[in-house]
Every structure is written in structure tokens, then in C-alpha cells.
Image 1 (cartoon, rainbow, N blue to C red):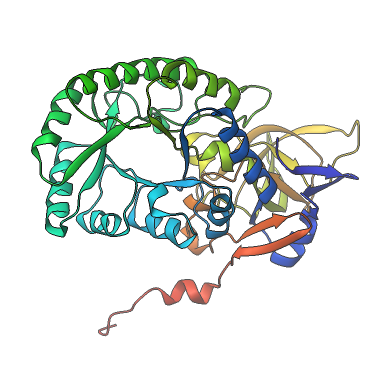
Image 2 (image 1 turned 90 degrees about the vertical axis):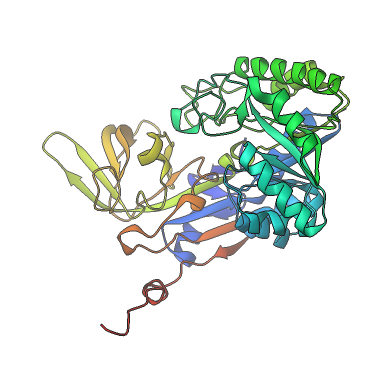
Amino acid sequence: MDHFKYIDGEMYAEDVALRTIADDVGTPVYIYSSATLRRHYGVFKESMSGLDTLVCFALKANSNQAVLATLAAEGAGADVVSGGELARALRAGIPAEKIVFSGVAKTKDEMRKALEVGILQFNVESEPELMALSEVAKEMGKIAPVSMRVNPNVDAKTHAKISTGMAENKFGIAWQKALSVYAMIRELPNLEVVGIDMHIGSQLTALTPFEEAFARVRKLVTDLRAEGHTIKHLDLGGGLGIPYDPDLETPPGPEAYGAIVKEYAKDLGCKLIFEPGRMIAGNAGVLLSKVVYIKEGTDRRFVILDAGMNDLTRPAMYDAYHQIDPVIQAARGAETALADFVGPVCESGDTFAKARVTTALKAGDLVIFRSSGAYGAVMANTYNSRLLVPEVLVHGDKMAVIRERGTIEDLIAKDIVPEWL
């Protein structure tokens, strides 16, 4: 459920008309619903009732300060993968003791900052990283809390570019090496084992891969405890999918996912950590765009928009589906036709949808890309010297610009021309 709906034939975000936002801020623009963010966080948290849990929102999905502050007020922690994301989480009011630091290439500077502020744990992904963290912690006179990311070699049955739990993926250590790597931690100074970390991929639409992975990690908890290791945290990652295409995708709900978690982890005596991102933010945001031209090709119609692949990268990068809806609802029984929805970027890949069924659109009409609240604005770029898309947060009948569009002058000013030119 989200809070983007038609009221008297016009699309609203909560109680704000999207046409009003277009008039005030321009297009393209990302729009987020506070109510949807809070609801999705609450539903996920409630699905784990009776368990000792910490829900760490994955900043890679959406790292805007206003979004983070909204979730921080609900009690969310943060899963970060860079020093920049760590700074963002702290600035938004997420306590350091609710932050886990993931990622395969943490630098020593990033490690120092995380140790200075006292994060909950490092999700370490390799032996060289362990040695670097031990060195930094020893220099600082700190004890670094460690959870190894263990790769269970489970096929998440998702897109190859967002699968992270197979042996060929760059993430984590091999399942077969877990006992020896944990023994290595015991020998390194200034490291403390606190748990196990696992994340098998993103946009999972079935529970079976979770069950396979949870069964493996459950056994690993038992095996490591038998070796004398203290396992008090169990980070089960994120990855629960959302229905980008409601006609084709029916991902399990948080309640079903929670039941699986309880089956495999309820009696382990661990604090359970989760890293949802898309599940919380995905359907809490839309990208609002304007039709620039309707072009009639030799064998197809093109709806040319002012949003491009630099603004919403997922269709070009993953062949991802986003539902496209007009802001002004078509009349019942309106004639439909097939059209390709494309953007202004000088690339053939700047195509959002091919042969999509649509009602008649004309230049100046507004459309939205649904399910754009995750991996939308955070992946945007300035290719073709296009400005970054602004972001707006809606709260009831209020709206606020939470990132400005900027100007072309600002963009060009970042370039430095050498003195010899």
C-alpha cells in the first residue's frame, strides 16, 4: 500500500496534488510520501514482533536527510556502505549504536571514523579487511565489533546484477571458510566477534531462497558457538521484493517473511538485525515527469519525456519495469495504444518502456514512474550536463523541497580550467 492515489481523477501524494508540485518545483522531480515511509517501516517491524530486532534501513536505497530523519524518528537504524553514508546517517539523527557498516572496500579512514563514533558492528567481507581493521583498532586503542559476512552460496533467483549470495559474487567469505576465518579473528588483536552477517540479494520474490540461507546460517551459529565464539548478533540482511509490476510480481509480504525468520531464528538467543531498503522506500516515492513531444515513427509511437536515464537509471541498467501512470486519470473506456516511453539523453538505452499500453498523451501532460523511492535519486547523475533531479517530501497537506535542482552555473563551476588554458 502507498499514498499515491487518484482523487477526482487527479493524482495526489497524500493530500497534495502532483500538479501543484510540478507547478512549484518543475519536472522531473522525485516525490516521497512520509506516511508510506512510516507505514512500511512499521509493517516490517511489526512482522518481527516478539523478537529482539533492529531494523537498519539500507542507505544505498535512499539517503536523503529528510527520508532518513523520518525513519530515525520511527526508531530505525542504518546499514551504510561508505564513509559518506555513515556521515549522512549520523547527521540525520541515527545513533551510532544503531549503525552497521557493510561493503567490500572499507578504507582505513572509514574504519577510523566508524570506530571513533562507536558503531554497532562492522560487517567484514574478507580476510584482508579483517587485518586492516585489526591494525586500525590497535592504533586507536579500540575494540572493533565484528560480524563476518558469510556467503551461503544460495541462488536468490533475482536479477544477476543484484544477486549477492552466490559463490561467484564479490561479497562475503565462502561458506566453507567460515570456521577458519572466525578462528583467525580470535588471533588478531583488538577485534571482537559479535555475530554473523548474511545478505543474498535484492528484490527477492519468493521465500525459498531465504529459507535455504537461514537454515545454513542457523547451523553456523551452532558450529561457531561450539568453537567458543560469542554469537549475539545475527544480521539477516534485506532483499524482500516489492511489486513493481502488480500483474506479474507478487512478492511475499513482511508477515510471511517474519514467520520464516521466527521458524529459523526465534530460539537462537540473538539480536536479529535486518537491512531493508527497497521494501521501505521503493513504493514510498515516484518520479514525476512531463511529456515533451509525441513522435510518430514508422512502426511505433514515442512518448518523449523530460526525465532521462540519468534521472532514473534502473530501466537502462537492469531492464527494470516501472509502472507509468498519467497524473490526470483517463476517462473510463478511453482508447489505448502502444508506445515507447523514452527520455532526452543521447543514448539508445535511454528507454523506460517499450510497447507499453497507454491512453492518449500529448505534450505538456504529466506522468509518474511508480516505485521510484528506492535506487532512484541516489543513482541519478549529470550525464549530458543534465541537472540532478530535485526531491520533495510530502506530509499530509504539506510539501517541502528536500533537495534543490541547482543550476547549470553550479554544475559548470565544479570544473577547474588549468592556468595554462
